[in-house]
Image 1 (cartoon, chains in turn yellow, red):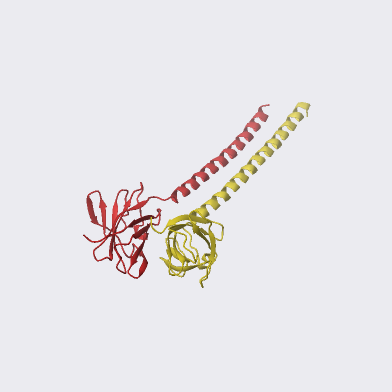
Image 2 (cartoon, rainbow over the protein chains, first blue to last red; image 1 turned 135 degrees about the vertical axis):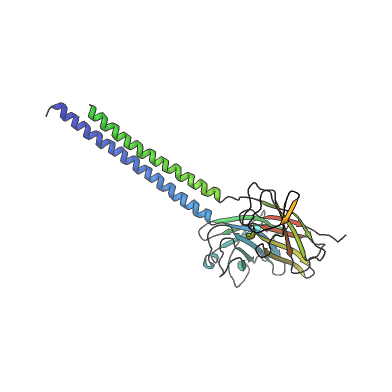
Length: 164
Length: 164
């Protein structure tokens, strides 16, 4: 075998190895980017599927509590167990919000489920509307700021007026 | 050198196809997510254009107009929350338009009986005929909150005043 043929063979082998390495690196990086993008898309889609809309709130002086209506305008059902882990933050429009945890038995600083319109079994299915009582013990005024916080960290905020 | 060049071109072509294919996949994925996000956006928005308390103080007529640029479907999945005052104190009543369907719809100067499933096109108005469980005080404000499924809620307050 001549020297030229040997050098050509070595050149081809080195070229193939280098090209394969570059291709493998490009494919690996592309896969990583696509994987990260896919995960982010999935998380985004999941967050879009869960959508709660606080729609109305009024203060009831007889029990010193706010009654808040929350609509499930998403595509995911919230079970009764999931609802029991929901935290509600409520306060005046321009003031500090207080946190209220779930308790069906009552007590100041808690919130409870009054009724669910359009759903059965205590779960909040898509399209249904929940009426909850938030036992504030105080009137925050006509306009309140409410945040509904789900166990997975999603939050749904709204400023609600008893009457505009 | 002809063989080496051919091999190099072939490898480069394969690598190019892989990279371009990955990019096309990412663009397609982004387009799908964008479409998904668009489908979750509110399609319409409504306003309560007027409301009237009849002479019996229990019949509440509410007109809802689609001021958006998209049709409002699933009209039956709309809730109406009415806050009014009675001789015994404030009262809140929730109506579901599946059980209290609209009675009329208006398109310009034309009016007709509402038929379920036709939706509410941009510019059209629905008239709701709601029966309150108690007589409302005409001297106190009445707040009507309309909660469509796929549109932001609309709120309206009026004081009926004494009958002429």
